[in-house]
Length: 78
Image 1: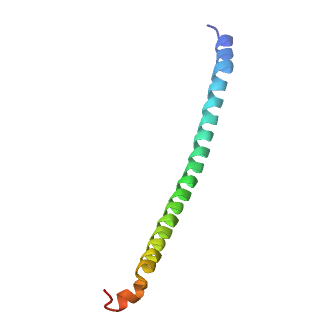
Image 2 (image 1 turned 180 degrees about the vertical axis):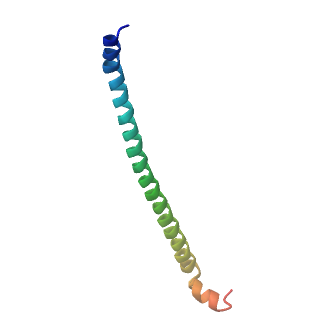
């Protein structure tokens, strides 16, 4: 193998491989950032759902007994 064949081999194989690695790194970084944002959004959504669920349970308990939980805690209501 002479020098010209090596240069041709690197030009035909090495350059496309290098470009593939650069594009792969870019894609992984971009997807990682988007997945981080998605994870943060899902965590916030789960927190909001938990808060709404706890508020609905409080309202359900108040409606069932006819007395608000604040009143129940402030008095000796059974």
